[in-house]
Image (cartoon, rainbow, N blue to C red):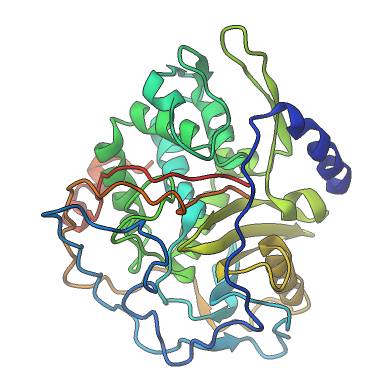
Length: 390
């Protein structure tokens, strides 16, 4: 049923803000071998200047390693790992039980791109009334790159902004939500506190949009924790599973149909949502979930290219292989692991001007509950880098 929606999206996106042409990451003949744990401490060196530090700014120290070893593929007996994969890291798990069915380099550290927007979305869902109206500022409307077309002076509800973030990966919508949450620096503190409260050990959200910035890091396992929590929230699940909405305009600019850019949702009858992402340094990233006869599974894909198909197609192969197995034979659980005893204190200075080749494309916990975790805040507010969405 989603296939027809995808065909409609192709036409209707003509009236939406136009994306810029897509850049393709370096070609891969096969998925990278990670058995030797090349990303145990930090992501690979950036290929752009997205993480260049300003004079006097210091690079944040990486998080301590919380989980040793196990950087290759591990899978339940009988799980047929798809051959057509180009990802460095991935995980397939049960949303409801937390059972990990298969994984590759689960705690390897990678850049997330826009799939990290789940943290912003969840904090907004938990802290803000969905019907609260936000008036867009000039700064929000002028956000570079991935945009859902917010206009200065336009009025949008929090729920509409959440659709803008989760369906269209709009950095303008993300910026608007961040202002409602207290501004950029306050939002970075909140989303890092929230991530830590879920038990993440490899994640530093250096930006709430997914733009690359010094210190940005996450892992397939950590993202599994985040999206397991997200898909367990009815508001997030409903919005992420929406094909399209009538998105409002502003002033004399008419509204338009904002379509979900998640190919798994639009093309697989069991798809229920997820998130897309891309930057030059993260490569393609993707999270997708399916619900087949009441069994909900999710897949996280990090650092992949288009050589083995679209990221959603690679995730789809992982999920379909998992549905061939009965529950109960997994290789682990999506549960918090022991928290490292030390965490870095990132420099909050502004980064150097963005390299125009660095691109980004889309494809609450109460204060009291997280106060004890404040020492682990790793947020670093900084200049946004130029991005584009697919």
